[in-house]
Amino acid sequence: MRRLSRIVPPGQRGGDAVGRHADAAPEGAAAAGARPRSLLREILRPMTAPVPALSLRSAGLSFGDRVLWSGLDLDVQPGEFIAVLGPNGAGKSSLLKAVLGQQPLSAGDLLIAGLPPARGRHRVGYVPQQKSMDAATPLRARDLVALGIDGHRFGPRRRSAAERQRIADALEAVGATGYADAPVGLLSGGEQQRVRIAQALATDPTLLLCDEPLLSLDLRSQRAVAGMIDRRRREHATAVVFVTHEINPVLDLVDRVLYVANGQHRIGPPGEVLTSATLSELYRTPVDVLNVRGRVVVVGTPDEPGGCTHHDLTPADPGRRPAGGDA
Image 1 (tube, rainbow, N blue to C red):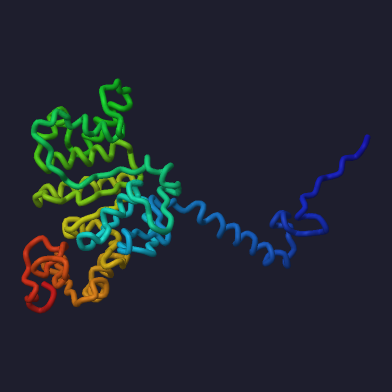
Image 2 (image 1 turned 135 degrees about the vertical axis):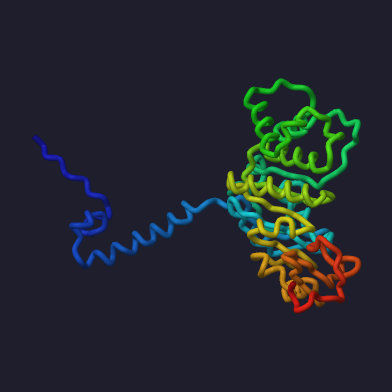
């Protein structure tokens, strides 16, 4: 009978120790073998790391000769809460429009959950700015939530049991089940905003974009809306990009701040970005950042009447400091 030869992998030919059992390896091979294993670990580590919900590389946005921001490098990780701050017209809402595909970037690249925008946008939920709705609007709360699933498809249609359940779950998640069949035009501002959040959650997003979701809401409604968004990101690891003029209602929830002003930007923890030195550099004029009873108050910015900017909830005298500095 013909004897079959053992097939030897290329790495083991010529007495090469690579691929041998570790116990059989000669002493001198231990150090040599450590390098490939170390390189393999380095290669595999990025593969096992979570994919950012949103990635921007060298991103820029301009309108004609006016640069809103440029050179923006940002990875928003799953479950991370990013607050986007800055004066009016700085490009905060335009950033969200770029992610939604409504405004193309002037430069750089954008990925959603590791995918090109056209393939990744189904993973995005969007809470728009609060707008009053006509009391005569016949649209019910559950109909508005359904638009989060239907997109731009209008008209009556039969829904599957799974779709109906998704709508019901989204309404329940924001505490809006009790007025699911009420016309949205008859709901209060806080109730309407709950329904808009439910609409954004109906698609089970990995990235939630919020454009001034606290605008025109009373303090109680602000806390309720902020709490819903925070609960979603904690329980489902949904990343949140939160454009706001009022940082204080969400200050304890924020992981990092993206501050844009005068074509520049800064990114970091709130305590590092919301400082007199950083904002003075961004605004190119002296700016004071005060801590008043746990609230951030920014005074002296040129874009706000009276010198107070968008991080204070109560009026402040720009020429007056609390006794002893921070209060």
